[in-house]
Amino acid sequence: MRASAGSEAWEQPSEQSLNEMTQVMAEMAEKGVLLAGEGLLPSSEGFRLLGAGGGTPRVVDGPFAETKELIAGFCLIEVESREEALMWAKRCFAADHGNTSGIELRRVATADDFGDNFTPEARAREANTFAVLDERRLQQ
Image (cartoon, rainbow, N blue to C red):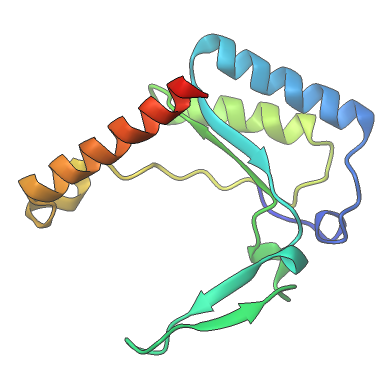
């Protein structure tokens, strides 16, 4: 979900918007499509690492000027089709009552998207990493 001038000023969403958004997210969870989702604090609370062609990255503190390029929150969903993703995005957009300047939908890259560069060793490391994360979640 894209940031807006209001989200960057940390204007709180309305009670109605929060209720409707949590309802949509609850429905996504019940349907088994919601993997993660959170609102993000304004860019004034963040920082960026900027590279300069392979050198040591430079730390730049927020806030950042281009509000339309910032993210105010996200949902990570696993769906069967573009159409299903679009349906959920429209529900989120409506529930947000104008607090977002837009919603960007992107597919998460899978191992196959990286072709031969994603070696069997790297694939095994990734599988182990996520097994560790899953174990930690179970322990919480």
